[in-house]
Length: 329
Image (cartoon, rainbow, N blue to C red):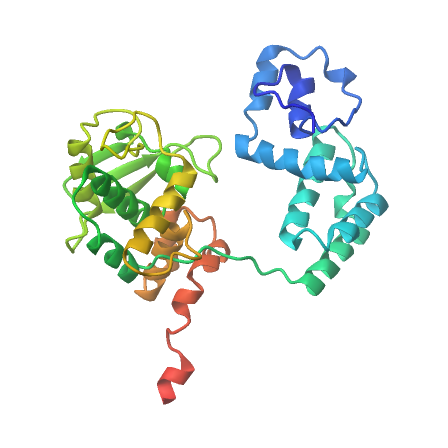
């Protein structure tokens, strides 16, 4: 794969960042005269992580021998040959990427053809489509984790991070992206303004209420304590802390969230296997469903667009609700 540029120049390179420098040469001559202002908006039309995903997908297609534009027959062969090494979900993402590239260049995409749809459907039937989901850190286990924590400055940070991540149903990227300026403490608790998220690429923003907790594990009080101990008045809320207890002004990485969760779970003696940075969000949705909270209220907190998406999280939480076996045993 050719070396990537952090900032593409002009629409030609902007479309190539969608086609992500995978060495494929397409006719972009009609874009050569585009001005820098238009190019800047094109660059911002896709999230950085989305562009990286496109890069990986197209690199795979190019390495196999694919070209843009492609045909349904070529794409079908690609899917069939890759079915033994790539998961159905990954192949579906490759299809979506190839479709985006074709549409971006004004080309007819072969991805919606009956042949391609039949091949991917057959792969799903043979290989299965179940995805390994992050293990939910439900309320009871979260409280066990919090009970095992001490009172160092790192404990204060992690306690706030875990409780805010859980109570807000946040994605790990949303959690580490929070700034002190995004918090407002009110009589009922704390209001968090989420300025950007995976489903809000245009930055319209969304406000999430975090009420005072009814137990000793209160997300609002824990956050107030962390901000005070860290002397934080602006900038990133969750930052790295050295072994000596010195706080860095930098923002925690998304990978650090997963590491913190796994480390804290292991401290309780429980196995940390299967837990990830998504476990707080999944744990909140699951715990709320187990408590009988209406799905629309859960979605209001998590920002899920539909019950169909939310159900991927709460299905396990409802396994024992009105369970037939429990009624007769």
